[in-house]
Length: 409
Ligand SMILES: Cc1ncc(COP(=O)(O)O)c(C=O)c1O
Ligand SMILES: [Zn+2]
Image (cartoon, rainbow, N blue to C red; front, side):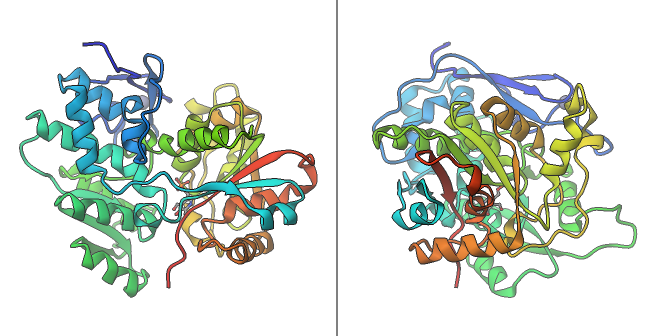
């Protein structure tokens, strides 16, 4: 059966190792080790994208374009069973609103289009990344390839943890969430309500450098847990479902009769910008946005510009940002894990990294809130990037931002 294989498999962007689409649990490059974690599988395109199905659920609408779907079909699952499984597992996912914001357009002096992802399952785009992992797992169960449920594992204390706990709860799958000791206890109680097992991670005397929550997460994965991660190097399938947001944005813009010129996307670990860029396509210029208090992608971009093959020199290119800080506290990842895909999407579309000042981060949050969006400072950081370069926006340009991350409290 070759129908509906729009993803042919995976290839490591670093060492070129390939993984077949029919593989169970194709999370990580086979050559990745604890000593050499600098590998990341990227999707290899297969056949043409089928036309979107007219359905409000993006996982139904774009289902046949996804890697988990190609896996299930390659293993013999029927199209109708894929649809039925999606309706069950991804119930509740929405086509989120898209429209021109008169307030933000006045402020910037050109048409600003907003994709409002704050009403998505768990309040952000993170569930889209995780859903393609969960669908792969549930398909493997249906196909008899997975007969028990190893725990899901994630290291996060933000939107990703909330989305992971929500999806695990809905599907009755056990989950361990590795969190820093400074996590807000109110957030911990929310995770408890979803039945997540939360593990505050203190630094141990014999720990190597790095985030202790990440170290414990990786230990759990080495012990058999499933990396339910929104970072491409930890789980390549997160880069799959995130594309639904880009496809949706493109289709909504077309339906509104607008040709988007530019898109500004806030970057933490980088999976979001990578997948949206892949989904929306190179015709829309993608500028990634970080805060001045944490801008490892911009620094890496400058280093990579002087190298022939930056992907083969990960360690030289992507270096941890010392002392990350910003009001946009959800994008303080000290490394942009998905930098290779981010750079690819920017290069292909003529974009570049933008570093917003802290004043712009705060101003963007105030403007977005005043314009009626219940968004966090993290989720409006793309708008801060737009403010930063507003002088270079041509009047008449149609620019888009994605507001995501519901303001809590
Ligand atoms: C609302 C929001 N926007 C953007 C991001 C950045 O996404 P990524 O880490 O995939 O770059 C995050 C990540 O935490 C987020 O919560
Ligand atoms: Zn590799």
